Each structure stands twice: as structure tokens, then as C-alpha cells.
Amino acid sequence: MAIYRFKEVSLPREPACAAIARRLVEQDYGPELDVRRMDDLRRVVGELVDNAYLHGDGQIRLRLVRQNGSVRVAVMDEGDGAPVRQVRTGERRAGNGLRLVDQLSTRWGVADGRTHVWADMAFS
Image 1 (cartoon, helix red, strand yellow):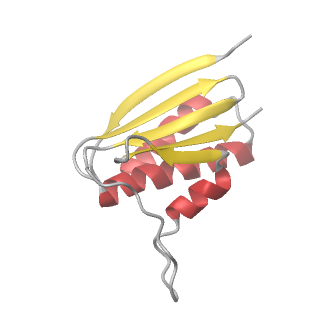
Image 2 (cartoon, one colour):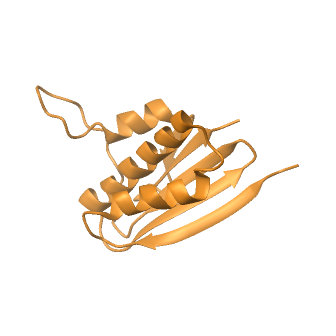
Image 3 (tube, rainbow, N blue to C red):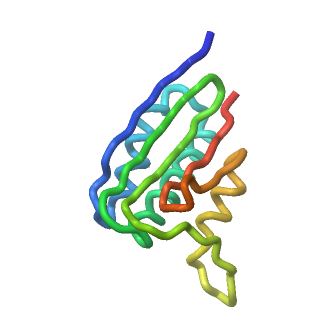
């Protein structure tokens, strides 16, 4: 039997938007996922939303699609640039968000070459 669930919400463009998104994910998926998987999902959602806040423009939207043993996280804003993976230099701590998304997801990408970033996470 296929499990399918879709949710899309608008997030406020404010410093706390990633924390708000992580709480929404906890509410929706907390009962279904073990602690490690929940932590990974929260981290990916937080990184993508934070990137949209820091580097994007306009409205931020979070979309979660659950189908069978996976969740697709998509974060969109109204900017016109594509995300760029930054190279770490020296002691710089910022710029590793997409590297983390790459490590925690089964795959990720950018839709339409714009600020619509998605990541698939397997939870079977």
C-alpha cells in the first residue's frame, strides 16, 4: 500500500524561519521516524530554508511530499539565482549547508535553474 502525503506552507521571511520549518517537520513526521532520521530530516529542512532566507528573495515556501519510504523536501523562494556549493577556506564555518544536504539525502538538485531546491530522503 502506497503512503502519500503532501504539505506546502509559506514561511515568514525572518531569522526564525528555519526553526519554524523544523518544528513543522517534527509535528508532521515525529511519530513516524526514529530519532536519527528525524534529526537528519530537520537538518536538511533547516539548511534549505536558511539558505532561502539568507540568499533568496521574497516569499519562502516549504513543500514536503511523503511517498512510501521517502520524503522529498523542496524549498522555493522568489529569487532568480541558483544555489552554489561554496568551497570552504580556512576557518570559515559558513557555506557548508549544501554539502550537508548532499551527505544526508539520497539525492538533491535544483528545479528550473532557480531558487527551487529539493532533496530526497529515504526512510524505508
